[in-house]
Length: 366
Image 1 (cartoon, rainbow, N blue to C red):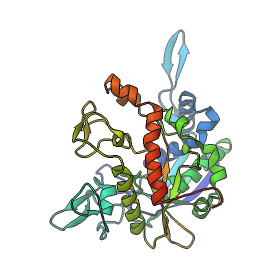
Image 2: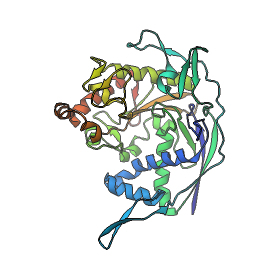
Image 3: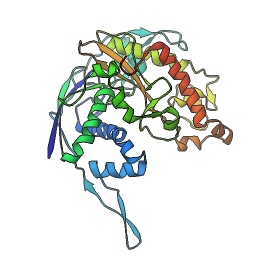
Image 4: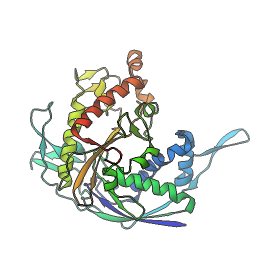
């Protein structure tokens, strides 16, 4: 067995719930995160065939569902995973009091909104009594809290797992509202390349292995690669660096407001419109045939990273995928015919144009 010992550090507060939904260090979310980014790292090796990839994932991380044929009948078998994982300690987070948050403008809301609350609504709530945002089920895990992650695995598996750990360091977030930048992780391990190389574009050549064109990505229903367009990777950084994670989150929140509101609504409920493709549900604007129970996760994700000089930078990156068939087939035939991968690509290109204005595209060696 080979061992990998990583230092874990959260760069932004994390909303990792235990059985009582209180913030706590637990290993299952980290194993899920490792599987998520292993799929991105390993997908090219399996030709982006989700059946082959899923089988390989089950054999590597454990399963209870892989099947085989015996006497003309389908049977299943189970096995433990080949990867062992352990956290240095399981304990509750230490963040019980939420800090003051900056305010930002939202063109569809009459008053300025809290930047933290906008990106973390649910884990954060607004307290009218205290007149500020509070953690709904405290404590949260605070920024700069650390732990150790210990992995045990066979030698042939070490390479792919190390690749996944590198992607987690650059792009991984964990917990509630993690696609909005909460629970941004940094991994400390000798084989992991630092954030500065990513921010300077020196990692773009490495990331080519895990990238595909926007149109190719939209032809599949699951996030499997970083998107690219004619300019480069769909990967951006904030134009400035910041002394705190809160300042970086403020800019990311304003950026999200800007690219979402660039896609206008025409009513409170009814047919699907462009903004619904970004994420669903949308407050006060539902798709009649989807109702309020359907879910569509954000494809465009945020992360906060820290340079060697300790200043913070916000990232935006796009792992594109097409609208799932289970949502597509709930729409009428006219709407289905309109929502082609080409149309979805046009919507995302409009979002990318806003990001090109608000942030800086990370390009090779720049």
